[in-house]
Length: 155
Image (cartoon, rainbow, N blue to C red; front, side):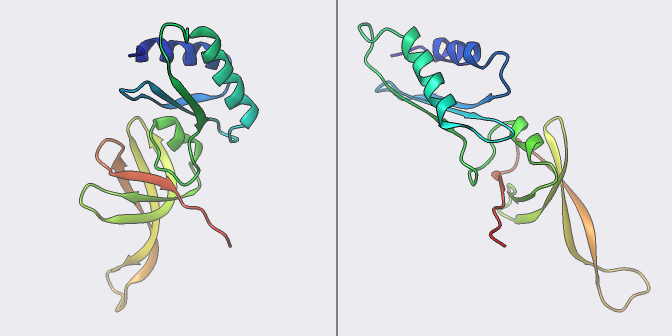
C-alpha cells in the first residue's frame, strides 16, 4: 500500500508558495489516491492537472499500481478544514450541530476552532408584546458540528 505521508509530502511540496491548500487526502486499501485542494478564488482544472502530474512524476508505478484523482473541494460540500471557514466569512452557511439542529445564517467570524454565525430570528424583547426580528450570534465548534457548508443561492 502507498504510504499516505509520502503522498502528503508531495502535495505539500507542490503547494509550497501557492495560495492553494490541502483539504483532504485519502488512500483506499486498493491504492486509489484522492486529493482535494482548495483556493479562496476557486480551483482551476489546469492546477489539478499540474498537481496530478507532479505526483505521478514522483511515484513509481513499477513499485505500486495506483489510481490517482486530484480535484477541488466541491462548492456545496461540507467544510473539512479551518481555512475553508475563513474563506467564507461574510457568506451564507448552513450548520448542522451535534443535536441535529440546522442553523442558517451568515458566517461572521472564525477564532481557532470556534466560529460564529449570525442568524436573523425572532427574539422576545422585554416590554414588547410580540417577538422582534433581530440578528443573533450563535457560536459553534468545528469539532462538534456534523457539518458546515456554503449555502448556494440562485436568486
